[in-house]
Amino acid sequence: MKAAAPPAGVGRGIAWALASQVGRQLIVFVTTIVLARLLTPADFGLIGMATVFTGFAMIINDVGVSGALVQRQQIDERHLSSMFWLNQIVGLALCGLTNLLAPVISAFFDAPELAAVLRVLSLLFVAGALGIVQQAVLVRAIDFRRLGLVETAAVLLAGGIAIALAAAGFGVWSLVLQLVLMPALTTAGLWLSSDWRPRWCFDRGALGELVPFGLNMAGFNSVNYLARNLDYLFVGKFLGATSLGYYTLAYRLMVYPLQAVSTAVARVSFPALSRTAENREMLIEGFLKMTKGVSIVTFPMVLGIFAVAPSFVEVVYGRDWLVTADLLRILCAAGLVQSVGTTVGAVYQSIGRPDIQLRMSLLNTTLTAIALWIGLRWGLSGVALAYSTLAVVWVHFSMFVVTRIIGLSFRRMYVRFALPLTCSVAMAGLVFALEALLPGPAPWTLALEMVTGAAAYGLLMTLSGQIRWRGRRPALAI
Image 1 (cartoon, rainbow, N blue to C red):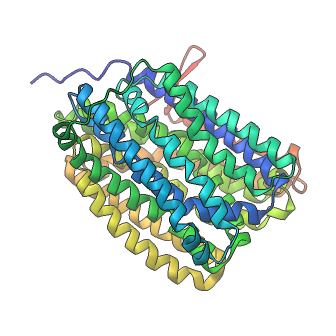
Image 2 (cartoon, helix red, strand yellow; image 1 turned 90 degrees about the horizontal axis):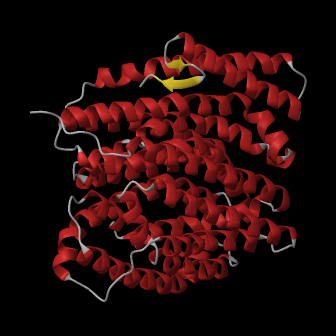
């Protein structure tokens, strides 16, 4: 049987998704640098405590709507409007629940000021629920140009306001308002740029067609979020707000490559793979190209961060944050494997099996809790080492499971990563050697190391045939 053609606009969608994702991460990166200079590690730690709960609740707020609407082959107005009103009910319920639980969560972390922070952050759920369906409609249409412009503008405005408030002495409240403004501004932009409006329709039949898939997906996202944030929970509870502030910054720096590249690619690949899920060869080839493309970009980013971590932290954030550098290097092991491991979810969702994804995530969460409990005995470094060690083991296991399900050779997949990994390791070795020859941390030495590393990686990838030049335009061999 002749293979179906890939969905139109996928390449363009990936380009826009990557551009907007990189743009947003760059804005967040610069904003965090400025805020780190204006605020204390304890301020960031307090927000880390709050977002353990609010981030989890935001996933529940979605009720799996986005995935269900994108994955389903045919949808109509009944599905869209019914899911919209369901989201509003859930959003209001979570807002009320957060206010009710604020004193309990505050007491758990032994941080009295956390209760007021959580009450303001409860507005996240109302603001976010209003834009979820509009966002899903754009993702389904692979219209990442419009979505990217809205989301980038929201991040930019929220970051600018946070910096102004921090400079004015608002302390942790500048971070709180930044978190609330991002979904609020995104929702406002989606409503202004979208033609779709909800109707007074609440069809139980339509919900019955979407909710089972959505609940499995929401269940996985919730459990996966818990697994990814158990380290915040353990550090905040047992080591305090200041320690969590250092750990939060290290973790953020580690996940920038994942958020800038892996998340964007997986976000576009989900609707694309969903359209070709019935053709296993196309699905396998799509998965291989997705993971290979991600590895080419993220491997050098993660290993580059590993190589320059101490000088980068000191030059960019200041000596007060130097504790972060050692944590960052340990966490880079997790970042390296998770950058490609993150793409597995798009495959499970595209073939309509978020239930397997949910069971895998439950196992991962249990193992993560055990590992972190053991790691706590050695303080912050122990937690980081426990998290990274389990991540390395888990991603290999996760990849093994998904390749068995779709009928892909495990070796065939790993061979695709060999050259990007080899070139990235060689690049990191060169940067290490250069750092040993240069004087102490300074902006110019850091810039020289980063430029040299990028040029070396580009040269190695070109010589190995992984980057091919068409005139002046490079193309990845994926």
